[in-house]
Image (cartoon, rainbow, N blue to C red; front, side):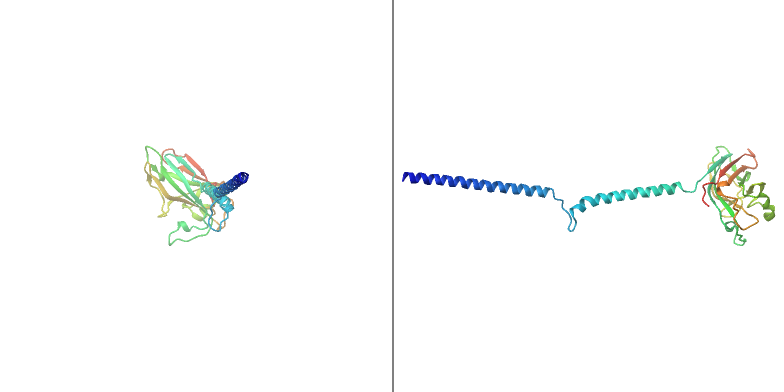
Length: 251
């Protein structure tokens, strides 16, 4: 009986040991599974319904880069447009600063005639100016200045045949130089007033007929070979002049 009891105890102990090993194996497996689940959860990107994970990680940066590139492209266009604007060439003469705001080439005299005037087709050059008195101690008397145009394509000797002694739109100065009248846009009258120190006059222009005997374009005159001249025709510093090239102004 003693031996039988001893065998039962050993069998019971072995069963306990086996049961403990089984429980430990189950516990370790359970812990490993939990760890794996946690690792998988931490590496997963949460996405909206219907959106793939790859779309979230690659599409957004590409869109950002495209936007930046577009911005740079627009900036480049803006810079180009700024650089290609009409120049504002200027020159100073005896206290007056003369700036050519624009130089256009209309095909009729419409901009200088009144409602009762006769419109005539042809080839003309309209030079818009601003005039500032940049002196410190004297007035700028615009009646003392002469406004001229020089180009190898101008035949100054042909103007008298059409205009006679009226030189509003062009009169003989020398072989390739003509003189015309400074006009006010609002009234189309001659500008002969005085400009105060620090004052700037705007909306004034000179209108030249480039081909007084023909309505065709004078092909010998181009912006590249034409210069606008402001000359002191009387008063202090008589005979001095400045030249403003018209190259670069659009047709």
